[in-house]
Image (cartoon, rainbow, N blue to C red; front, side):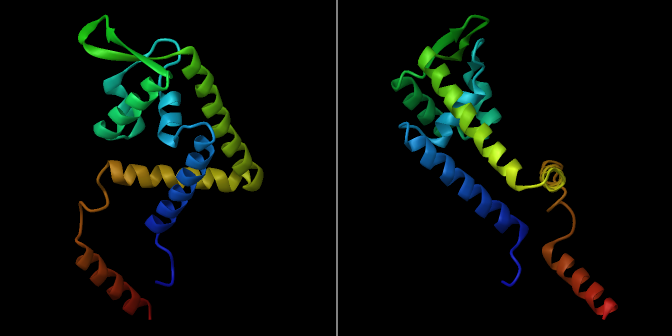
Length: 163
């Protein structure tokens, strides 16, 4: 394939970012998932466990494993939701709040470094493109219309018309 596809660029970039965060987190006996969970938990009021999965885009089994590990490390505690006895609220411990601050600074450092190397205008275009891709996916505007073979035929016809 001569030209890289958009999904390839997105996937390769995200894998590089995830690897970078996991390498940094491993210095503190943590993972990117742990850092992301720390940042997703309300530092004062706690967060319902059922809200964390969707907020983080994480499957229930992975989230359960991450929360169990975080609890074992003393980063979080679980308490029954006083408004709904069936639910559980996740709270950061003092140690969890300390590690949350470390995670926050790591993310801010990444953002700062990227902003130092990419002009504001290009970064704004990148954000707009990413938002548009997310909207297309969210609104199911990619595979909801014509089939791939119909699109291929249309592209070939357009190319022939141009030639």
